[in-house]
Amino acid sequence: MRTPRRQPANLGRPLRGAALITALAVSAAVVATRPTDPAGGLVDDTTPAASSSAVVRVVQGNMESPQSVTHFQADVKKLLAQKPDFITYNEVAYRNDGVLAPGSYRLFRTPGKYTGENPVAWDSSKWTALDTGTWMISNSTKKTAKQKVQLGMRYASWATLQDKAGDVVSVVSAHTAPDTPPVNDLLASSVKRLGKLVAQLAPKGPVVVGGDFNVQYNGAKYKQAGFDAAGLTPTWAITGKMLPTGDHRGATIDYLFLHDASQFTVETQRTVEINSDHDLLVADLGLPGANGSSGSSTPVTQARPAFVHETVRNNPRKAPGASVQQLLKAINRAPKGASVHLVTRHLYGPSVRTAIDNAHKRGVYVQLITGDARQTALEKRYARMLGSNVHHKSWAVNRPKAWKQATLPAAGVLASVSAGVPAVRVSLNRALLPKNQRKPMKAWVATGKASYDSLFVRFFKGVGRTV
Image (cartoon, rainbow, N blue to C red; front, side):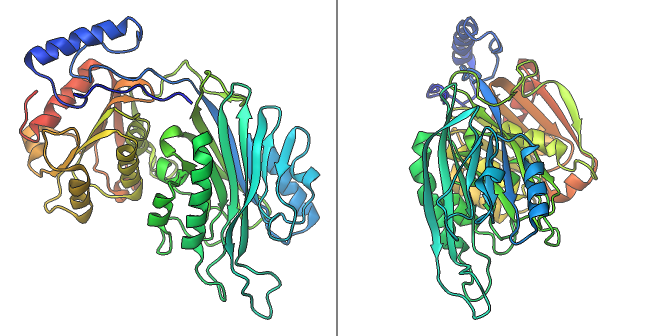
């Protein structure tokens, strides 16, 4: 996989005087080899080149056991109709391999009542298996007199796969135990075990983990700290929107987790109704391609950049998060060494928190201005994590008067480079509060020196700095 180039030591600092003139000269020299870069300005003096990328489709499918053969086969047919690159199956211990992976598809699992429940499948016309394995995630043997299976006996199947361009991805299929007697809550220990597996696979390339985790996303029993420690980010957090994944009172309990999330983009995500009590979870994931292509039949079009000049309006009923997604995308796709300047009157929500945390972890310089009347616990956390000295590369401060002093948008972000596009600006007409996503909201997206510099100057004016 292609990695961004190392950035100079002064990245993220506003430039002035002779330093700015020097930066313009450097930027002009770089333009000769990267014609998409803006010529000079207050944008960082170098930006990583855009990576080639490809899209892979992953389907997570809990097929429900037991259900009739007719219903099961209809569910598999509907799953395969999605034309996935990778499949993570659950509850198929005794189902026929040839039905689960017909034609060009191949499947791996260790046969058995427990070891064979969660196979991984892939399209062999695009991907070749380099390695496979089975991994224990919990081994509780407890069961009641009426239970026919040991609910705490859980195994994950995994496969490390390579496409024709040489890109490598590992796929893991898992199904954690439900929190029911007599096994009770095994989620924390199961995620810890998964984290050990992912840590072993990660040096080979990006890792996708699919499965039914039997816990509501961001509910009281969701182990955020455990998933963070394992380096697993759910696609729900990246898109900022969760969908019900089956016939469980609208619960969201099926997942696709990504490691390292900074190596992915979530191009699309949806659920598909089937006979099973779980819906299919279908996601198109963008991956950086080492050779500019992937075995996937769904290449990323190069005709339209990730960011263009446009106004994105959310539809409170059909697409409540469409405008906020533009802001999150700018943060999530900023590479190591880039600078992200985020401003919002109010800072709230797991998707925003995850985006900031992941950006900081992968080496993005994050500068944050918030405007709550009183500094919240989350804002204090970022002040501790990023520091509060506005002359440093990363910092977080609470400045309620900044909006009046500097005419700032209700929420906005500047990314020196994101998804290979330099000088990205996204401005929102409402603050980052969940309730605002259920109201009409606009995101103004712009790229290039003029629009970037306009907000850049006001951003630093809001904290009493000039550029």
